[in-house]
Every structure is written in structure tokens, then in C-alpha cells.
Length: 262
Length: 310
Image (cartoon, rainbow over all chains, first blue to last red; front, side):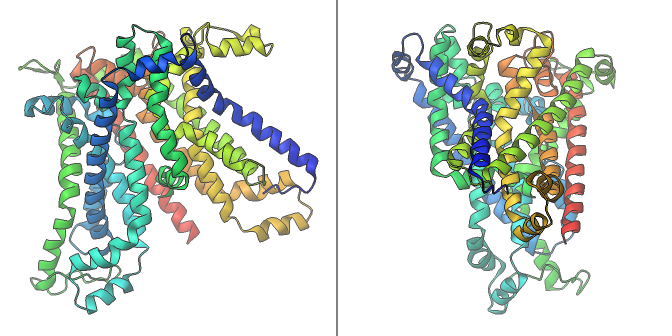
């Protein structure tokens, strides 16, 4: 854009960029600093010695994997049907799904609570998995339908002429072409589930079932508000996410910004 | 055996009762998982919320009392509700302008062949990835009277700006806004960066040959070309404003004196700690109407954009 030929302009742009990026870096640096103040690395040793810590990661992993699997299967089947198959009231059904696109989870908190206690699934993984998947599906179906709309019908016609059933056309013609949008769905759902705070807060009371977003509140109780250890726990919680992002930068950037590209 | 028909072809009404109709009935099976897991759960819950909003109920007692629209009249008379609504509007305007501006500036800078561009990009995008719930403890510590922010201000000669950030109404809201911009700018940056890469270099070259300076190219060519992206960012931040919960709940708990109360935190407080589930459901229905309104607006502007491009 601003391909300046003079080196002085380039230096100025470099300085401007550096100054602007510092406020973004600052909280991360402050976080590491705070986690090392007081007793230094010992904060980490104390936090890592808490036997419950791995459970938070295990719970988040289990919940994320199940939500991703549910969302992926529901999305692929529904998006293919909405895009390539004919049936009555198709657009009405599509709008029915889309109406839930922007639904904030807090809106369905009360009925979820009443239903979960009624069904006896309160304080189980399931009480968090089901609403998370339910709220994610409308959005991923919209994204995936738009993507599959881009696959030419001629490809499907060719398969039909060769005698393929609808299922085989989906399985061997369409599905293999959906890898890019599939990756976006996985990343979006993973971050949405892993980072969710409200549903685990309300529905997972037993510390052995809680997720990583509840680590800070657990440690506030555990360490009687010793902030350095609470922050050390936060650093440990953030690390896997940062590492995952660094390893898969393009995938994360595309997946997380896919939301605006509908 | 069902067959795939051409998406564009109109076969509606043809051969009534024939094999084509059977095929269509089978086609509904493809929607079944999504509709059982998503539509059924969501519509059941929304209907249930609508019913609860007409009750005086604590969420546990076996005999709730039907009170009609009293929860809604209570809401209309509740100054905290109007405060929360006002904060939501302020939050939307400020985070939209802040994220769009910073995202645009970073996108321009990183398109200017800077050194260490990848490093800048990573620093801007990492806040998008980390959970707000994970970052909340450090933000609470940073903004305490003896925290890093006040220390930093003293060290750079701005000691007169030191204040108890989270203890005062106006600065507490400011802190919430800054955290939201911090964690959201990465998205607007990536969107602008990608959109800028699609602008044809010929147009920019032609403008330069006509004597346009860098600033003129930015304001007259690049910015107008990114209108669609800016609309998308506006929609994303609008929905983000309505969904906001984690940051105000964990950093300020809606305080001090409701200064950082948003619809999300208000509904949570009413339904969980205060057990006013009926009232919380009335608030939820209001939030639902706002969210669906935003969704419709999003579809309409999205469609308009698509048509203009075509």
C-alpha cells in the first residue's frame, strides 16, 4: 500500500507500528511479570503441584472434542441438503435455523437450568455440550452452505449420471472438497467451546468436571487471593492456546475471521 | 434411491406423487441431526423463556405465580436496565470505531513491507485466541491503585493520571472498553488485511501516476474499497456488544454502582445469584428481540453487499 521508496519514511512507519503494537503486548508482558513476582518460579511449582490442574484441561478437551464432532456432522449434512437438495419449505427451514444465529447464550440460561435439573444432567458434561453445540450449528451451517453453493452443480450431475446415490454423491464428490471450510468450523468451534465461561460457570459445580476458564476462580479460592499464583495459573492456561495458534497461524486467522465473511 | 437435482432447476410441482416427491421426503433426513440438536433445543428454550417471563418464579419453587406482563413493566421502570442498555450502545460505538480504526491502520502498515511483520501480526492476534476469562485476573491486577498501569504512568512522567481505575464509574467503563478493543482488534485487522490484498494494484498505480500522494490513495481509493469489510466489522461488534458477559463479569462484576452493567451481566445476576428467574427471563426476551433484529439486519446488509458485487 504505502510502498515508500525513501528509507526515512520506512523507518517512521516501522516506529509507528512498533508504538501502536506495544499496548497489545503490554498485558501479556505484565501477566508474565506478575506471575513471577513474589516467590518467582516457585509460583509455577506451587500451581503445577495442585492435583486438580490437569483435570481442567482434560474436561475442556473432552467437551471440545464432543462439541466439535456434533457440530461438524450436523453442519455438513444440513449444509449439503440446504445447498444441493430439493425439498419443500427449504428456505423457511433455513430461516428457522438462521433466526438463532445471534442468540446470546445467557438468553436460554433459565430454561436450560430448569431442564437440566429436571433431566438430572445438571453438573455433567452433557449440560454444557448440548447448548454449546446448539448455539454453534446455525452459524456453521450458514458458512458451510455458502461454501458448498460454490461447488458447481455439473460435478453433482456427473455423479448422478454415473448412477451415484445422494449419499455417495455427498460422500465421494462434495465432502472431499469441503476441507477448507471444515478446518474453519473446527477452529471456530474449538475456540468458542474452549473459551466459553458462562455455561461451565452455571452448570459445572464439581471442580473435577470444570473447564479451563474456571481455573482462575478455583485458584482464587485455593490460594486465598494470592494474585501471583492466580496469574501463574492463568499463564499456564493460556499457553496451550498460544502454542496452538503459533503452530497453525493461517488456520486460526482464517477460521476466526470466517465469521465476517458470510 | 434418491437423486441429486440441480440446485438451480425448478422442478417444483412436477410429477406429484411420483418418485420425485418421495425423494424430497427422504431429503429431510439430512436436516434431522442439526434440527434435533440445534433448532429443537433453541426453540424449546426460547419458548420456555417466554413462558417464564410471565411468571414470578425463583427457578426452584414448584408453584410459580402467573403475573402477566408485570416483569416487563418492572423492567421498564428499572434504571439499571436502562443503564445496561446505554452501556451496550456506548460499548458498540466505541469498540466498533476503535477496532475498525486500529485494524485499518495495522493492515495498512503491514502492507507497507515492514520488517518483522509476522511478529506484529502475532502480537495483535494472540489476544483474539486467549479466553477473556483467562486474561481477567491480570487485568484486575494491572488496574489496581498499586498496579502496573499506575506504575507505568508514573515512570513515563504521567503520574498525574494515576487513579483507582476500577473503583470509579467512568474509568471502570473505560477499562472494559479498552480490554474489548485489545481482544477484538486482531479480527478486524485480519479482515482489512485480506480485503486490501484484493484491491487491484493497477488502480493504485494509476492514482499515483495522476499525482496522488499516499494519504490521498488511502482516503480516496483504499478506504472506500473496504466498505463491505467495515460493514461486516460493524455487525460483528454489534452482536459482540449484545453477547458481552465474560469481561465485565470477571473484571468489574458490573460495578462500581452498576457502571459496567451490561444486559449479559444483568441477566446473569438476576437469574443466578438473585434467583429472580422470572424477571431475568423478561430481560432475556428483550435481549432476544435485539439479537434477532441484529441478525436480520446482518442478512439484509450482507445480501445488499453481494448484489452490489455481482
